[in-house]
Amino acid sequence: MILVTKWFGVFLVDKEKEQVVRHLLFEKEPKAIAAKLALVQKGEVLPEERKLAQKRMRVAEPRLSSLGKPEVVDTAFIKPVDYGFSPQLMQKVMVELGKIRTREPLPADRFIVQAVRALDDTIEMINLMSERLHEWYGLHFPELADYAREERYVKLISEKGVRDAILDALDLQLESVGSELEDKDLDVVQRFATTLLSLYEEKERLEMYIAERMQEAAPNLTSVVGASLGARLISIAGGLKRLSQMPAGTVQLLGAEKALFAHLKQGKRPPKHGVIFQHPTVHRAPYWQRGKISRTMGGKLSIASRVDYYKGAFVGDQLNADIARRVEEIIRKYPEPPPKERRAPRQDAPPRRSPRPPQREGQRGAGGRPRWSGKRR
Image (cartoon, rainbow, N blue to C red; front, side, top):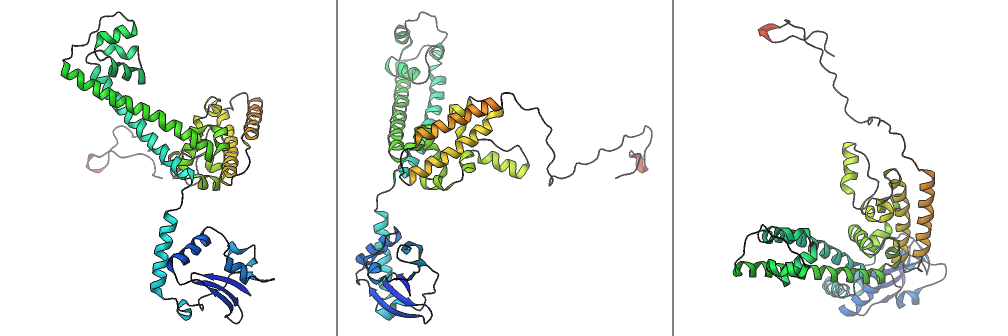
C-alpha cells in the first residue's frame, strides 16, 4: 500500500492494481482546502494522512517519511472529477492558497538583504552629494576640507554656514582664498548640507538595524565576521538559506564573481577571496597567506550559516578559536613568501604565432613589394 495526497484528499493506493483502497476527501470549501495545502507545502503531516497510515506502508513523497518509506508511484488514475471536485473549484483553491502563502511572516534574512541594499544605495548617494558639496562650498571656503572630513564637514556647513563662524567653531585663524557668497547662495548650500547630514543619520540607523537583526537571525555568522560583513554575505548569496547550502569554496569567493569568470574564460589568475577580504584577519595577512586564511574562513562561515539557518546552538566562540588556531599555524608554517614561478600556459590556449624572419636589404618582390627571406611556416 502507498499513501498518496492530492489537492482534494488523501488516498491509500494498491500500486500493482492501480486501485484506491481507502480515501479521505477534503471539505469542498476553497479556504479549508487551501489551509491544508499550505500545511503540506510547509512539510507538515495532515491528520487525514495519519488516520490512513498503516504498518509496512509506503508513501508517495519524502514529506511523509515518518509514516513509511518513500516510493515513486504514478497517481494519474486518481482524478478529481471522479470524486466530485471540479476544475473551477481547484482554481479557487489555488487563489486562496496564494493569498495564504503571501500573508505568511517572512524570515528575518529577507529584511536583512533589503537593509544591506538600502545601505549601499545610501552610501552611494552620500558619496555623490559629498563630492558636490565639496566643490560647491569650496568656492567659498576651500581650506575647510583640510580641517574637517565627512560628517563633521557637512555638519559645520549645515549649522554654521559662513566662513567666519566655522573658523570660530574650529578655533582657527587663517586667511581663505575663497570668494564671498551672497545670502541666497549660502542658504541653498546650507539646505543641501542639511539634506546630506540627514543621509548620514539614516546610514547610522540602517547600520544599527542590520546589527540588531543579524544578532537575532544569524548570531554565529555575526560572531565570526561581524554584523556588517555577515549581512553582506547573506545579501550576495540571496538569503541565509542559500548561503547555508553553498559549499565552503563558494562562500570563500562570494563577491569575486567577475574575477572568477575572468579566470575561467581568459585564463587569468584565480581569485583567492571575495568580500571576506574586508575581515581584518584576511586583509592584514601577507599576500602569500591570504588564500589559506580565506579558505579557513570560508569553511567556518559555511558551518556558521548552517547552524544559524537550522537554529542550532551557539558555536561562534568555538569557530573563532578554530580560526585563530589555524591562522597561527599558517603564520608559523609559511613565514616567507614562496619563490616566484613562471606560470605554465594553458592547454587550451591558442598557440603563439612565430615571428617573421628579418627582411634583407634591397630584396623586393614583384611590384616593388618587399620579399621575405626564408620559408614560411
